[in-house]
Image (cartoon, rainbow, N blue to C red; front, top):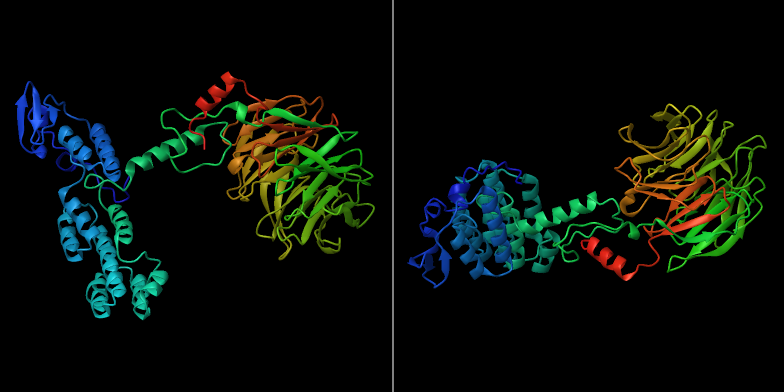
Length: 581
């Protein structure tokens, strides 16, 4: 699709020569013909059927696309035969001539060709832009050849009178000061005189030509790539990196990922906690998992190369239990918070297994949530009794905000804005630097917890009696309500996950883990195995096929793809994922 709005009115003249072909007569595009037994024989000896039907517009387009692709592969004789037999023309003769002159560096002839092309174009300004690009290449080649006077003449007498992109002309004039060719190529970010730079120029020039005159470069590959990407985007279970190339996929089957590749299967059950497990969180680098329990401990697990978890450290002494955990941006530190009646906060050095700070401002405080500033030097904490503090790594109070009954916290990437959900069923943004606040999200029911996407655009809320809601923080609108989950007044923590954070997972009071594709309200997976409420889920940020869930049943489950496949399953999986990257 071209931005210049060129129509298809010229296609009958430019693309195909079908007026004679529809009457069973040989096309004039192929040269001399003789008829033998109902076949039309060309002057090169090839036999071509004489009984041609009139091609539809889409059929003409497909033939031209195939012809362009074959031409790019160097199969020029095949292209000639295809165009001859179909009665189509790959591109307008003026465009062919223009391209040849550009590749050969015959700039005066190329400029002359533009006059012929002008009548075929709908945008007069496009000719000016094309001429500017031609003259720019001509100017740079003169400079590289040390023909400074000729280059200066092009700049003054040809480029400047166009009165187009004067800022670029000033930059081009500065290249006159380059002392040698290497300096020119570096400053101009240019490949130098020759095929490479001229081919790149031709790709730019082609974008201004209507497709009826000349197809955009590599148009068939572009369409195939778009088709593959669209199929991947529509695939509910696609959870691998999107490869924009076509070499790694098969075009012979539609793309469809299997559920067996998705983290729907229990790979491990961690049973080291001896009471309800209230929280779990993977580290930012994906190599560790921290779990917090009513049993007063935090356990840090190591994720090995085979994605198995091994106990690494046990951090003890949290008298009220551990209901919330937050990794520092560099994963050096881990902060643990307790339930509503806990006035203390623990800041651990994870690698050393040592407590760096145990913070408590007042025995009447309730510090139940925490969030790290992206700079890694500060954090905010608060609770439902009206405390809202910003502190340094030693627990020193830097700022405070009075009267905010905090349910959950998040620091945005601008390092200034803190999001806090409160007891008024809303999320507000607080700026500790200029002491301003603003309303961002307003719900009709209590917000039990929330999390924010990596890009800071989306917020995922667990809303009492309602379930999981997705909000756009920039537009301040509710995007989607996800169905299936059972959410009462327990605090349940959901998460984004998978490649590009395309998926959403949440625990539930019906003992299940629910997974949705971000754009679909209905769950694509319901994971069973826990025997009590699932309080928290965490998706590994580095390994998209690894998910953890923490439950009141005292266990942490690690979910991954199907652990093994029999021969029949494996064959079906290969077939269904033939376009997978």
